[in-house]
Every structure is written in structure tokens, then in C-alpha cells.
Image (cartoon, rainbow, N blue to C red; front, side, top):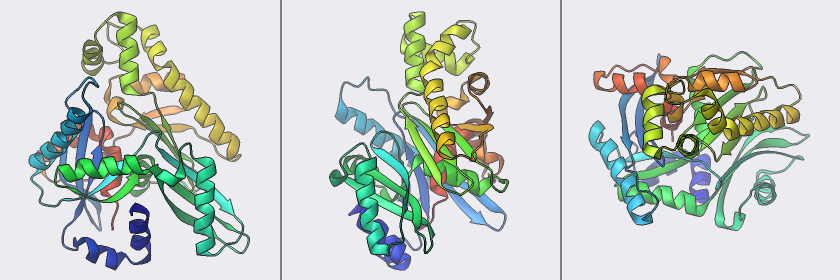
Length: 360
């Protein structure tokens, strides 16, 4: 059903709008994470994007003891975001990330659209680390010539898609479109930042449970890798080394940062070692595949990027300069009540900003 909906969207956007009956209802971005939910609604005019609604709500910690309670906590966080903004729209664009999502490029000989679609499913079955029979697959052709076709495919397990849709529905929200977090980040960057012709862009989004490295090459082909070691894992390692509770370790990092007197350089280095290693290996893999690629900057965003000193620390460990990126440096916020959240938490809103920029 999800795949059919996407196909309908591409073939006949007008009928898709009529089907969902939201011609007059604007969509908003809804980033449903494991530790927080972010909502963002944007308006676009000749001058660019501007914020019309923004909210962030923490997901109550559950300790992993009760799955149903954990789901309810997420629903409550969505409801809190809706209440904080007071928006009337209930049509959301949501994002997916993690081991149940795969983004891969493909190159085939010259094929008809129908042949290309079948070839994409076969390619996904070989390239994705989960059963395609239990997944949703979609693709976008980037180039089609007499020599062949190339593009990018996206696959996600039906369970993950259904979980997101269900969480939104339980908060009385319609998930009208699904995106991939890595692609949403790239969308946000390209919509708000100037880019030198042929430049390769690398963006690192570090959240609580997942870090996403998204790269856009000089041929505009996206590369996305999700790393299952992020903020929560770093906090757990710090807590273990310093014999602290996880909540206390989190509090120290959030309030005092990586350079806290209660920590030391070796503790932070050890806690981030796996993340740094996974990022470095991914960059090496990418540059080995793309011979002309040169990555000299990594734009850092995500909730954990707000930890004081984290960007500087990563910059000292990675083979590229790390720059803390706040997309709201280029997105206007005329509504006073939302200025504080986008100024203080802007880098954490990169994914949801990319989702909010999607149009149907």
C-alpha cells in the first residue's frame, strides 16, 4: 500500500491530493525520535522559507521495560507538540532511519520504466540487509540515456513504516508521506545553502540512538549510512567509565559539555571512539567508490551536536573540518514565540526541517 501510494503520487499528484483531501491543509514535518519528537511547519515564498510553527517535546524515559508504555510516551510527545503550536493541520511528513532502512544507488542498461522498476526490486533484494518481501521499495531515476539509467532506491521494512504511521495516527495525525532522514537532511541543506558547482557535501546528524552520515556527490547522487552508535551510547560509555548513573552522565554532558571538569579527554575520546571509527570508515569507503570525491568539511547537526565542545572534539578526530550547522541561519522565523527554540535548538531540527520542505 505504501509503495502504491508513492507511485500514485509520482504519476498523478493531483489525484493523490484529492484522495487524501488536504488541498487546503498544509503539511508539516514530524520527526519522531526515540528521545524526543520535533514538529516544524514552514512557509515558502519568493524570499525562501519561514517558520510558522515549531515545537520540541521530550519522550518520557521508559527504561525499556514496557513496550506499550514506550509507544504511548511517543504518542504523548506528538500530542504535546500539537498542543504547543496549536496548528490545525493534521497532515505530516515523517522520516525513517536505522538498520531497517536502506538507501542505495543503481545503474542499469537502458530499460523501460516498467523494466527499471522490476530491476530495482531485484537490486534491493541483493543490496538490503532485510527481506524485501516484507519491505517497501521505491526509487528515483536521476539519469536516463541511451546507454543506461541510474538513480537511487530506498527500502524500509513494513514494520518500521507501520510503526511510524501508527504512532502518528494514535495522536490523530495522518502520515501522508514517508521520507528518509538522510535524504531529508540533504534536502534541507540544498534548499538553504549555496553550493559550489561539483562540490561534495557531507552532513553528520547525531541523535540519541542513531547517527546518520549523508553525502551528496558532484553528480547529485545521494549516499546515506546510518550508524547505530550515537548519543545514548556515548552517554552509557561515559557513565560506565566514571561510575555514574546514565542520567548523571547525561546531565554533565548537557550542562557542562565535553570539556567538563568532571570528565577528562581520554574518557570522552574512548566514549566516541566507535562513532569516530565508523564515520572514518564510511568516508574512506565513499571516497574509494567515488574516485573524484574530496570531503574537506562535515556539517554537524542533530540533538547531540548541541553538547558543548562536541563539534570541536569530532573535528580533532576526523579527517575533515567539522562545522556545527544550524539551518535556521538561512530560514526566517517571524513568529516571536518560536525564535527561542530555533535559535537554541536549530541544529537538532535539521531532519524535521528537511521533512517540512517536502511538498505533495
